[in-house]
Structure formats: structure tokens, C-alpha cells
Length: 124
Image (cartoon, rainbow, N blue to C red; front, top):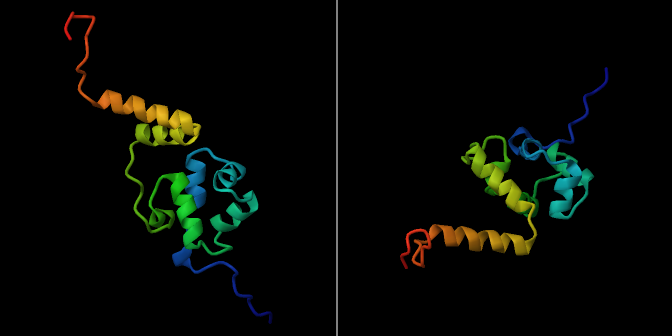
């Protein structure tokens, strides 16, 4: 009778949601890999718990997914962003750094009370 080989996968507590998070954003393995500076093979191994999800990997992935590191794991609560907010974050991550700064400047100006001249009603 053949003996069962031990699994190379980490125990259940180490199962993660990387693949779920990636697919929910419509990202390919290669796209996510490029965003964090690794290979699609490495991402696949992380998704399948074939390699340990170290602190460094967790921080890098949490950064691109805009979540906390513990939200990468199966028993973590679902992120609480509504779909519009999630979409804004996803679009923002695709912007160049200069465009991100422009978005912040524009959002900041929209959030402040308007005190300048209003040509519609002739006030200043």
C-alpha cells in the first residue's frame, strides 16, 4: 500500500484571497506581477499557498489591492468599500504619478468651500 505524500501547501490557516482579489479587479497574473515587481509564476504560487506569504509579500500585495495585510487571508472580513469607491480606487491605481497628484488637487479643491467670484450670480 502506497503512503500518502505530505502536501506542499501550507496549512488551511494560511489560505489567502489573492486570486479572488485579483480576479475581482479583472487583473491577469501578469498584470498583478508587474504591479509588484515579480513574475506571474510567483503570483500563482502565492495564490495557491505553494510559497509562504511573507510580511514583505503581504505588504506589497495589500498596497496594490488597497487593503490591510490581514484582508489577504480567507478568514478576514470582506472589504467594506462600495462598488463606486472600489472602482475609483482601481482607476486611480492605473494612473501615472503626475495624474494622481492632479486628481488629489482637484478633489481637494472640490472639498473646500468656494470663496471666489461666481460669474453666475455676480458675487465674489
